[in-house]
Image (tube, rainbow, N blue to C red; front, top):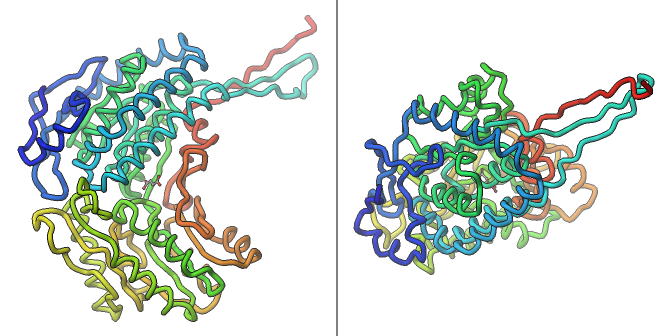
Length: 500
Ligand code: SIN
């Protein structure tokens, strides 16, 4: 299907060096397929339709899963770890060669700024490069046996066909973080990209096949049909499901996957605390808050959701944070001066507004922001970056992930109180704190109930660092040396009677 594109975006798409990377089709059984049914994808800064993308059915998923099973059997047995490593390296090179085009496509469907999009493409590619190196490191063990004349050894083997369900906030990086380790160990993948951002996924798949990946080892099926996507979690052929998204959906998918005892990785919701102690370097803390609160316009699972500041420094921190927030320039992601893009959809904007209104009604103060910026398309999904002070634990922002550019400031008196407030949530993905006291740094890092802790930094995501949560923020780890383990199974081989 030649992509149907709405006129306002033709100009931006004309800048692509490789227009063939803008693909509206699905990739099933080694072919780009254009079904009759499509769904619209919106451009967030205007709210207009960017294009129409293949809407795949449950039958299409059945076909793709069968093809991926065939692909897995050949790929896992006919390639060496070194060949898979070389293939991933080639894919990495192709992603980096085309990073400007992928970034442009990403801005058009997600809304984030071009600079952030280029950064995301490099972040996405870093997982491919990392796992191309890890491909050769899936060592087994030789274990001293308790029985005479016996050797016990382990082999790490690919789990099989993997179902990959990804979110819209990182349309490139969340795909590579999941599929690079899968492909490194010899699995095949069936990807359901987010319906908000399917174009970036298609560009990545096209480049993977160009890099030499056997075509049936990777399948891409955009859909709006939740029933169709559940085939990934119920098909007995699929052996592993990896999902990033909300806790509610993650629990639902995990229950479905347990019906056939699949391995699961779930990277789910967060409610990240960000604590500023009175012994912190306040300028550094403000810088950290800007990075981890306003990245992707506040739409990441690891964004600070609750900012706790010790009473004695609350005024200073608030004033400095407000000054930085007021420097942000909200607008169209492809405009060079924009530092904050729109949110991905109208619901996102409504949620931020609801959190602000609820907090103000319960006594919080709006320090800056709160409305829609001037000089933007009123049909776009924009909201000003906002700061609230005087926030208390009875307000919605205390327990509900805002997923938008709102920084709510709570005050505390003691370290014990800060830790108790920080841990008072069913979530446990990321947590941050700022302090110059080494004893406190070690104590608080250990006490926070999170999978990821940033100490004196707001930047914690990297290919080499394990990413994942505790409590209801999920199970499993992505990236790092641990990310590979999610895609293999350990087989114990006992060789007996070695004296016979
Ligand atoms: C996410 O929001 O799910 C991922 C954020 C990251 O990788 O830093």
